[in-house]
Length: 281
Image (cartoon, rainbow, N blue to C red; front, side, top):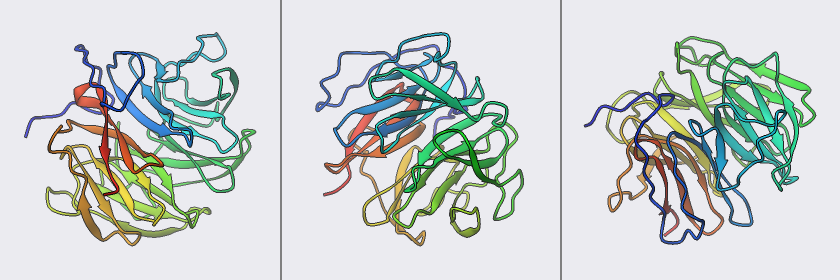
């Protein structure tokens, strides 16, 4: 297996791979991180090294300029939520791309993944601080939990702690613990519920998990970065299957999201492109 660069590393080469179903204009990516999809079918890609989010372009104003976008989510009110790692805050844009506000400034150390729970709260995975923050949309802190370590309620890593989060239909928070090679599930108060995964290449094992999403049935879809694959688990963490990527293999997948018509969109960071695969057969 080829050695992968760290998820936060830069890449000098540029390439494009557009799925046949994509009608967006050609764009170049260099270090794709987070992915989100809207109910209207729009795909948003956090292009970290190009300092922008595609395919939805944002105006570059002083107040809304992105330094290192890594995670992206869509709030039920239509706002676009973007984790900005180097600015150490989360930016909020309107659905038209107008900068509205920022949250977490002075609290966050290195926000990576973002998600939105069923209460409209913004969940931020602080990769550098190894903890999870939950904010109201106005920026008020609801709670935070986690720290550096190998325990159930901890996340491992010196430079790369937890990466992304998703929320299931029970409003539970599912977090990928990169260096602990596992996925952990918490309730909204931060109480530990379960974990699954271990280091390896077998079914249900990980080599540094990154992106995560949940389908309508509660199944958990996880990007296995170091093994360059996507695995599917049931809600209790039992391995179910792989997403079939053999026709167009991945190389270091990062963020992923599900579309309403049964596809999974993946930020293929090693190939500097995003790819769309059939999920529901």
